[in-house]
Length: 465
Ligand SMILES: [Zn+2]
Image (cartoon, rainbow, N blue to C red; front, top):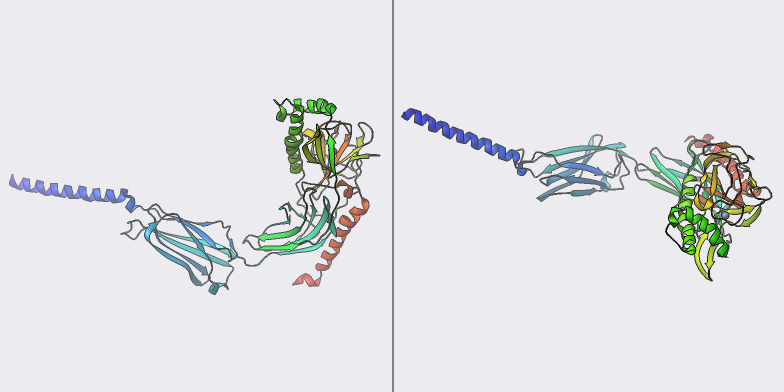
């Protein structure tokens, strides 16, 4: 009996110990103090390229907090420590910004490995914590892209267009465009030979001052700029006061107000007019800018365009760029910019563009009525508003001289006329320039011919190095 009791108490002690050990193990296993997850490490805002000027930003985090981390750079055989830090208290959400010390500005290779080692404050691994080691291979590129202007139109008029031919190149080129002072970006179309581009640019009539710069950026964030030297020509635009007649408000405005969702529930004619002239116009113009912003990507050698005159014997009724103020009961109640040329001949006159192109839109567009838009290439578009009949469809290829539509009174108009618009990459420009053969030759054709000659010369022995 005694023996058995002894044996029993021994096994009870053993069992208790076992339970204790298992319990302790379970406790350790379940306790957040002993978590076994490695710290999370990421390199922020990096695409695998580095110009060594922009600091490398790492984000570190861990559920039990970070104890320490180190960042090293390996350049072939050599390893440089960039940063090492230990925390007295475990730290969460650590953001590390690492700049390159001046002593390692010269690297042996253009591909390096950045290693970050982060240790957390967990008691796991006999209190030494979980270790994350992450390698980030980076391509080093410290050279700016080449960006130079080959040639451009001598000048640009307010509200007008110009042409620029330029060269950009870089082993890791990511983006390039012509940027104006107001932030508008014009894209280039490949021109004549590799690395060369051509772009039409425009000075919006609503902008007082104009300036344009070629900007090229590579994947490592190196940026090159070349400013485009253009003689700026002021062009006088008119301010016109138009009195809103009862006939117009009770006729056209009443008719349009019934049609547009924007004017539902609005009773006063003058309020309906304001909504149509402001809200509806903004939406209609947004659609136009959308439809006219595309630039082809295929390489071109030349671009020929005929002087535009879409309406035979068309008399100009309203000018491009007019700043219109609308008066009602002696007060200015609304305003707008007139972004086309109004022309009229007879009712339902045939509209015949002098240039071939692709129809990109041929539908109704609010105050513009039935409105086909044609792309003539290189981001140059023409628009025909207020048409009665339209004979083309989006996607059609039209030949020069074909009748695409007839004038009419659709949209916000008083009498039968054509609203003729010209757009360069979504910017409304002065149609008169494109209706002038001399202007086209001097500003577009000659500039492209000069550019081809210059590029051909560059292609000689001098360009070998
Ligand atoms: Zn018009």
